[in-house]
Length: 460
Image 1 (cartoon, rainbow, N blue to C red):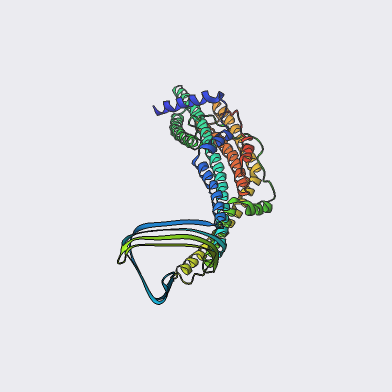
Image 2 (spheres, helix red, strand yellow):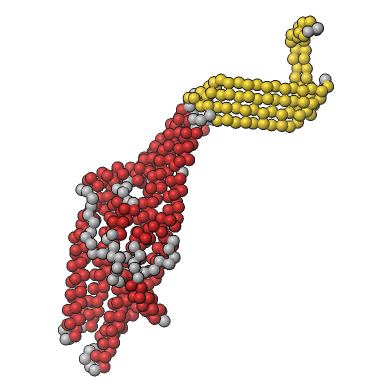
């Protein structure tokens, strides 16, 4: 039953060959709108502008208003005061007293503060600028990774479809050999071992076809979900026999450019700068600051007390400079600064480690692309040899010089050689995209160059 289902799927696959192949650019454009990584990159990029605005806002004036109202009890006493008023003359040693029990109190204050000299704010502003740059670099890196992931998912589906097609073709060939072996055994022209060998290979291939079909469905589902194209169907455009892309420059130049332009390294450098700015900010928190301040306030008390009805009203306006020097924070600032220093060391170590990795990856990618033409030529020659061997083995078996097992092995070798060539072409294209990413150049034009190397009318 499962074999019949698989054969029906194969028939549907063959029927779809007349349809135009979906290519890499079509899938990428959809993924760029629907993949969660695309949303993540957009959100990361969107953090840059607010961080820069925060950096500028640190040097703008701050305005604050406070107010309070409630019940209050108040009393005041003053002795030894001087007093004079028209009609009362002048008195000394005067006592004044006020008293309010359970009266009403209200107060408001409007204040403005403009920073003039502040080392901590200067460091915080630089830190926010670096954080904004880091957000843009992180978004760029995420978008590059999305391009790589999209191409990997696309080519995984292409390779899975090719493997299924080849295994189905091989399975049909083995089924024909099994029928022929049985016919020849009945007339005494072949041993019974030919039937056993053909049956064993046919059953093994049926299992491989089922596994390959499952792998294809999984690859297609992953591609559909990431691209937001639920109706995406086969065929997908596979790599053509075009010449392999070559490295864009000599090895050392590529390696140096990767170390200079890789967005991941730039992101780690920005994080080092953010961590260093944090250390400077904590150090500057102990320095003096100078602000321009302006304030207007009013305090009003009403009620009755020991001396009858009373009402106190106080108003104040002030503009001037305020100087501030923190002296002691209980040890918090020193401990926090020590933590920040260690965070800088960690960020620098991560940057050094990433530089080593990028250097190794760029060297490996360059060497792989540099040898790609020779590798693909060897795989092509291997496929031609496997096909020639298969044709010779078929002829030899028909005249009795080759056994059924020889033919089964030749069929298997031909299928493996064809699949190896397809996989080799895919690996070369992915390596070219990987090198573009290492150089910080991976964009839609890079995908378009790879897309131009695909066979838009594939012969699956």
